[in-house]
Length: 181
Length: 181
Image (cartoon, rainbow over all chains, first blue to last red; front, side, top):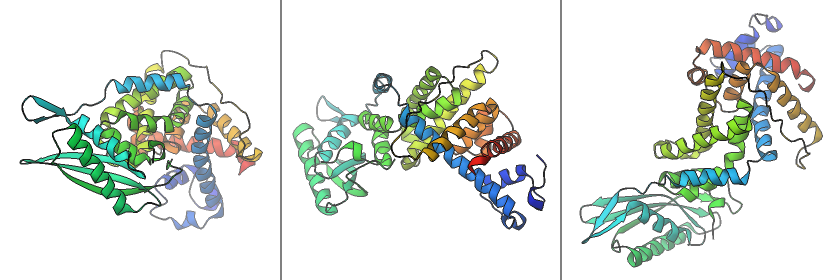
C-alpha cells in the first residue's frame, strides 16, 4: 500500500485521504500526475456508483407495503399534540389541532401547500405565521391572499381564534410533477 | 390542487416537525426503499434491515423539531439509519454469523442500458465480497457521505483506522473493477 503512484511520491493511501479532504490544500505532484488523476477519478466514480447501486436496490426490491403501513402506524401513535392554547371559559384548543386546521385550510387553496406554521401569543393578540409553497405557474401574491382568507375563515368557524393576525410567507415554489428526490 | 406527493422534502420535513404525521408518511414512502436498501447492504439481512429502518424513523420523528436544515432530511435520516445499523453490527460481531445475503433482483429495468446494469451488478458483487469492516466503512463514506470522524464514532475505532480501511477497500474495488474503468 506504500507504493509510489506514477512516480508522484504519493501512495494510494495518500490519494484516498487527499480525495476525502476535498483535494485541498492542492498538491501539485498529485494534480499534475496522470496516474494519480486516473486513480482519483476511479475512486470518485465507484463511490458515486455505490450510491446509484443502493438507489437501484431500493427501486427493484421495494419494501413490502405491509411493513411500511405498520411502521407508519407505530409512528402515528406518537404524534405530538403540542401545548394547550387556553381560550375563554373551559375551552382549550391544542396547538396541534390549530396547526392541523391551518394546514388543511391552506392546502385546499389551489396551487398552495402549507409548510411550517408558528402560533405566537403577543399580549392579547394571537399571531399565526404560515409558510407556503406555491405551484410554479401560479401568481404568488394571489395564492398567498387566498391562503390567508381560507385560514381566517376556518379559524372563525372552528376555533375562538377568529381575530388572530395571520402572516403568510411564500418560501418556496414547487412543480406539478413533484418531489425533489 | 397541489398534493403532498408534489411537495419537496424540505416542506414535508417542516410539516412533520410541526407534528404532521401525514407529511412524515409521504416522506417515508418516498425514501424508505433507499433507506431499507442501504441498511440491507450494511446488515445483509432483510429482517435486521427493516428493524433498523423502523428504529431510525421513530428516532427521526422524535428529533425532527431539532433538525437544522430540513431540506437535507433524506441525508440526515440516512445517517440515523447508519448509526442504528452500526450499533447492530457492533453488538452481533461476536455473537452470531449472519450469512443470509439477499441479493437484489436482477430483472432488467427499462431505463438503463445493459452496460450500466452489468457495471452496477459487478460493483455490488465486489462490495459484497469485501471484509465486513471495509464494506461498512465504504458504505458509510460513499453512500451516507460521512466523514472519517463520524464513521470512527459510529464504529468505535480511531479515525486513522477508518482512513486505512477505506484506502484498502478502494484499492480492492479499483483492482476488481479494472475492466470497467
